[in-house]
Amino acid sequence: MKQEFSCGTSPIVGLRFSIHPMADNFIDIIKGALREADTSNVWMHTDDVSTVMRGKEMHVFDTAKAIVLYAAKTGAHIAFNGTFSIGCPGDTQGDVYLEKDDVLLNTPQIQGIKQYVSSQFALYPMNNPDYMSAIYKEIERAKEHGVYNESMHYASGLHGDIHDVFAFLEESFAHARSAEHSHLVMTVNMSINSPSHREEQ
Image (tube, rainbow, N blue to C red; front, side, top):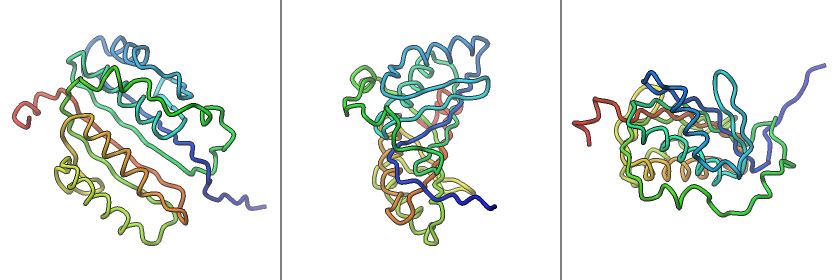
């Protein structure tokens, strides 16, 4: 019998990510960033390849930004690769982390830390016949936010301060999902502290 899957309506947001420090002490940098960030508002599990977190949208983005920033503040060249998802049929509405309040635990500690990032993102509105229109709207939003860098195959370039880039990513993620097409995936790649950034900043 064929099993049917339909997009979920739960507001739970998931993120699977990996951080790759270009440094000999990469283990210390990764584990240090995971420890330093306050992860109380998200469910999180790390294996030998990546880390997954799930929770309210605001807390997933808040925690992810903190982890990236804490890794970057070591001064090492950092690569971040993440996939955000909402509306996945496998996510359930009963997750306890949806009951967390709206107080951001990391923002007060990191909001004053400046960090340039070069980034690429791609949106995948699932089962949406008008997906290109949804994508173009968010590219225009990136330009309005002042973080748009360039167009490219399979992604769009972003750059600027990490707080501005993450603010755009969170807003774009929220707007690109529609009531009719509730499953959305967004991929994000970041390069931080790269030697090639010195001329761009």
